[in-house]
Amino acid sequence: MIAFGLHAVMAVLDDSGSTPLVLVVSEGTLNRRQRRAVERAEARGCVIERVPGDELDALSNGVHQGVLLRFDSPQQTLAIDLETLLAEDRPELALLLLDGVTDPRNLGACVRSAAAWGIDAVLTPVRRSAPVSPVALKAASGGFSRVPLVQVTNLARTIRQIQEAGVWTVGLAGEGEQTLGELDLTGRTALIMGSEGDGLRRLTREHCDHVARLPTRDGASLNVAVATGVALYEMVRQRL
Image 1 (tube, rainbow, N blue to C red):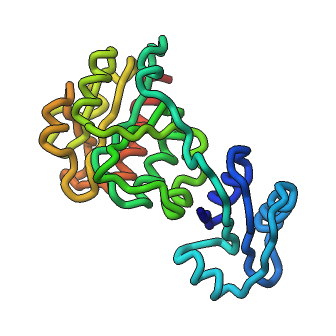
Image 2: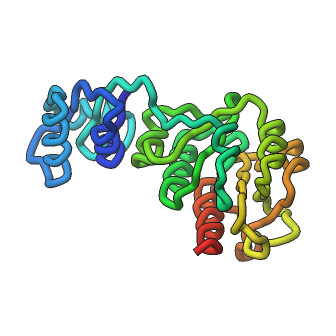
């Protein structure tokens, strides 16, 4: 696996479950954050390579901020058993379900927001979902190491399962009759976000306890990652 960008690289270096192999750093004078990454990599026994900037561009195919890390991680994300999680006595259990988010940058951004707001787990379908790729890892800025990711085979069946465990399911869609802020999100709640293009699938929508919308000016739509961050903030705001 590879990670690029300072946040993503430092998250892997700080993860005791990963095995850093080679840190590739652009030639020239290093800034303070790059030097910190090199020092941390050396402390983990990582080989340091200096390469021209254009070579690093080709290796990362993205915004690398001068660092790229090759690492071995048998477990790229935190794992958790959904049945165990649902059985725990958590009156304020907070879940995020992603219904077909296929862009790895959006997946990473959603996980980053989930980690920032202390969400207990992110659920994604095995099919029709972006993989945990280097791009997703970079966008998450370490989020995958702070919030568990649960992959499920059937999202509709999973929604029924969490409902039976007393979890309130709220789907987000522009045509929702109520705004998200009008709902009580303080108990055991799962927010369900749709895909980038089509939003919530019909079957997913039909299984939700409520379908709500985010109030935007003139009904403007939001990118799924942005909408996820706003929706999670509203849930946390109510709980605080």
